[in-house]
Length: 313
Ligand code: FUB
Image (cartoon, rainbow, N blue to C red; front, side, top):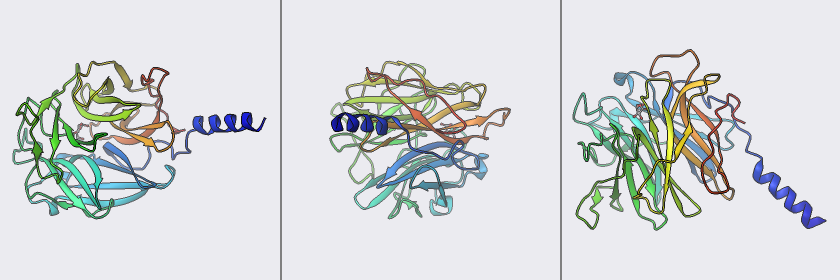
């Protein structure tokens, strides 16, 4: 009887999601949120969603319980990055050794030039982050990929990759151990294109049960039909065949749901999608807010459609 009760209790624990703050997770216009756990603390690094000229800093948010979030203002600021003037986008942060590295896009090189993807470093997850290289890590298009929407991925063998790209192309490149540049692949190329069907931007990758899940955003980010789709493969290089949509607008709740990340709660098969969306009735492109909802899998490891909620429970 005791064993039976313990099994039921364990199942209940596995199935009951953590309490959360409700959506949006914190006030203000924040897009492209990257959620990550550092120790026992949840962190979200979003784009400050304003006009390009006003996107001269990045705030971060931390929480010990997914319920109460603390704002860390201006963890990165153009004043500390001499080549970055505006349009600071889509932070991706990773801890390596005792330091935190924040990869970011700046300047929208399509329009302004002189920008691309940069790296900043700090001793703390809440910054301040300072420019690491004194210049962009990637400053031009490769394989048609605009150097934005970077995601830094640590593979199971300890290698680090940068997966990035806007303008409907996505590249993967192996980072040097000190993040000062890239190590070319055995075929001599540095940037390997892994673009799946319908890819637009916002790549993200994670591993579950040995399978590589590659996810991205589709549609135009300014409109209501922005969404997230995914593919699965046995390696970070694919091939990635589009499986289906996992996140999209719910006309009763919000529109333009996309540019996401995924948080895995350690020790459990619990996964959360962290994403941005636009409140109902809101049409201004930059009026995007950060939300979290549960992401679940079926018995074959396929991702079930995420139900977007107001309550976040
Ligand atoms: O927030 C700026 C841009 O909008 C991002 O880089 C894109 O992914 C889109 O969300």
